[in-house]
Image 1 (cartoon, rainbow, N blue to C red):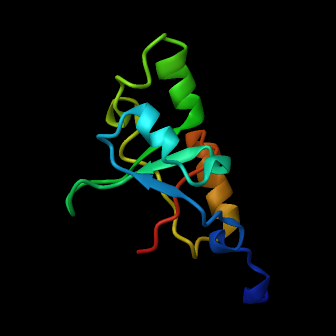
Image 2: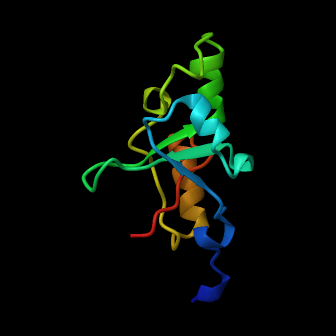
Length: 114
C-alpha cells in the first residue's frame, strides 16, 4: 500500500488569497476593489443559502465587456459571471483534480470545504 502522506492534496497547492464579491457590483467597481489581482479571478458570493457561487475570470471580462466595447461602469458582474461553478474539495487528490480540469476544460476552480 502506498504511503498516504505521499499523496498531494488540492489544499497543498491552492491559492488562499481570493476576492469574493457581490454580483450586483459593476465590473469597474469589482476591479477597483480587488485586493488580489494576481489571481485573475473573482468569486461571486451567494445571494442566500439556497444560491450557488459564481466566478468571473479576467478573460471573461476581456471577451464579454472590453472586446464588445461595453462600458465596465454599466455592466454588472452577474451579467458576465459563470454560475454554478465546478468546485473542488481541499482534500481531493491532485491527480483527480487534474482529471476533472481536463474533462471540463478548466484552468482553475474554487476550493470549497464541505
